[in-house]
Image (tube, rainbow over all chains, first blue to last red; front, side, top):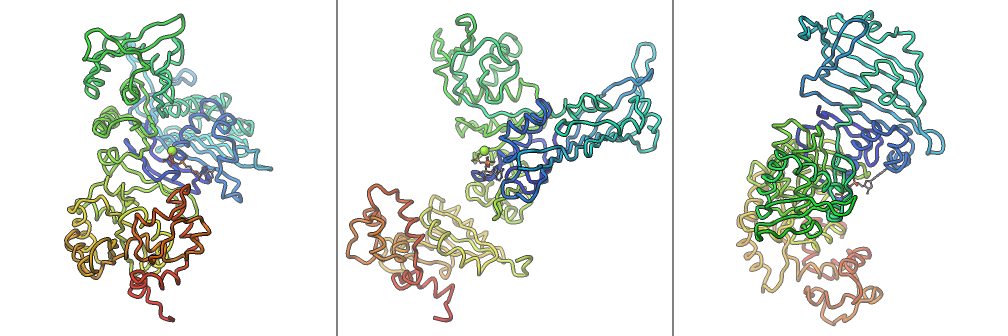
Length: 427
Length: 184
Ligand SMILES: Nc1ncnc2c1ncn2[C@@H]1O[C@H](COP(=O)(O)OP(=O)(O)OP(=O)(O)O)[C@@H](O)[C@H]1O
Ligand SMILES: [Mg+2]
């Protein structure tokens, strides 16, 4: 899955934003232009899926700062995200005795919050999940599963004022109302009877009709992963237990490394890439210290047998290792990294970008990064750039420098992108 | 406002941050009355090739224009200064060059009087007219504890443009040439 489009209204520094995204997206812009606000849309959605609306809102600092502080007359905050499937994943389900499957092509999730009295209360005003998909019927012949294509269609769940409506439609109406009933054991009447709490999202609402739709959307949105690496914590002793995926700030990097190094193939893959960046690193090993602690050690080619503790590792070394792990070892379909250039020498940046392009283009993961680094801008290429700007009212907006006439003229005349970037001529 | 038939874009070629600060606060609005869009191009660390290329690009576009501002520094006369700029910038048109006499710091000082400077703690106010101030002399009058940026911003906040025009001929020349004040 890949996020194709994001739009928000009255969200943080945005009055209105509607932007299409690609496989590899590099967001630049002045300090406080709104890059991190943009990234926060994704963490908000991810938190909404993982922890529910109330927690998602408190995690971003409360409803009063989720909305734009200059648009107080506007009591609605809205957010919409569109994702597209790159693979032909099949989701199977069995209404009655029939085996059916859908293959989602595109999903849309929309949320509109209404801020009620005293500015601190809120409720969900409207919410919608839409899936554009292919319908299949599954036949099993001699233990062999075969899917027969039925039709293209669309499933939507709309919630207005707490009421829920569910619609299934298909192009040639092969999938008819009757099938809806058979699929979900609900008829239209019953469906519209369903009610949710004003702050309960349909994504998390287990009680809603067609639960597997929620499940599917949930899975897709959970595929979003955000990182902003801090190289300091991995230099300390790490606990032996912890999350099995890399934390957003990378603080459990050593634990993740330990797991990778236990696997010969992964160890080799990691070592090769690290050596390409930092040829003097010969080996990394993880030692168990006391009961609950581990520590990384690193051997450089300059010595036969001396290992150096992680506390002596350079910041850039940790940043590079974390990046390699995020890109090639954490199997996340949507990777968002804030300022990945941290502590990395400009000379190595082209290689970082090569990895990102490899992962986004060949391995079909989506990458979104923010940066202030001219080398990243240069190597990413104009087609992947987005510029965040604030207008004279203070609202952020995001534009594609590629579409800017002036930028085109400069580029045609041999000025380089990084030159334009440094000069502030991208917008 | 809206779609203008005569779109025009002006690049101000400025040396560095002190020039940019001065232009943004004191002159930018005036340029914006003359052009649809005004952008600043800082040339200080650019190579000769980059400068030449940039001027070529601007020259080539119909509605693009540029004005180059350069400190007078140690050169003996404005014409020879302009010539030295031409040698650095290649292809630059002489009419588009403005020389800042003596340096941008003199444009700062031109808009305030000594009483004001004293009131913000300036020291070593010398007897030589502000027009001849150099970077070194300017730094010498900044109050010891005050950051240079703050000192410059304080000056710009109390800037009296009329006073500046009487104090500094090169600034007056710019105004007369570009913003010709009709009711003067
Ligand atoms: N609720 C809000 N309403 C209005 N403006 C907001 C709101 N929340 C944040 N902002 C604005 O957004 C700015 C911060 O933007 P953000 O953190 O996205 O910047 P950035 O582009 O990531 O900058 P940097 O490169 O420095 O990290 C704040 O300075 C503030 O002006
Ligand atoms: Mg930021």
